[in-house]
Length: 198
Image 1 (cartoon, rainbow, N blue to C red):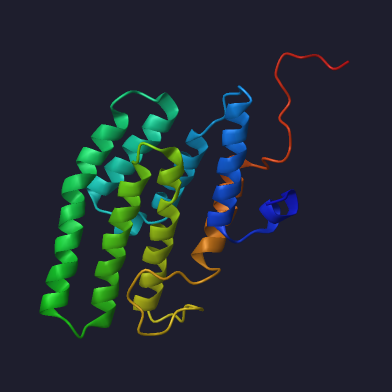
Image 2: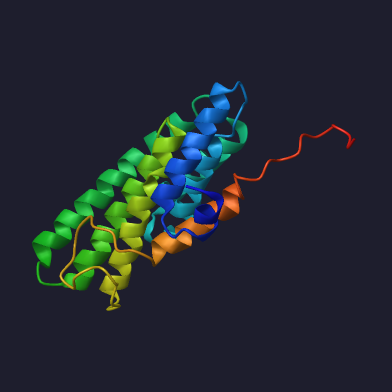
């Protein structure tokens, strides 16, 4: 991906691939790139799901955010432990709604959205910042499911959708803008502090 692509893309997956490659290349050159920017992006995606998350999931996101600031050993383990019990509750809710109200499509979509939002938080706590950033796909699925439950037409999804496919635009475009806001323009060299101009 070139600079123009980065500045105009609505595809966070392509942007993340490009950014991760740039970070790894910098690491190979002996630099110390900020891989945790990928996890900060993951947390920002989870923040967009706040209404779908229960208190335990929200606390997990806050713990992951704290980890990105301090890199305290064990911080991610604590966040995963907190999320584990909450995730089981989210899965059970989907099963309960499927069994009790199989024809209530909005309720099923909202339960599905909460479950996928739970998955996004789980992914954000991954040991690898690059894998954590892939939570954006689950986050987008959750948002699209909510929009469908509310009766909106989501371009690229058929009206009977409940599943993992992602439409273009919409939440993905918002996430691309979010990633640019967090990372800036990786194609512009950042001046090194303390070096005087010649």
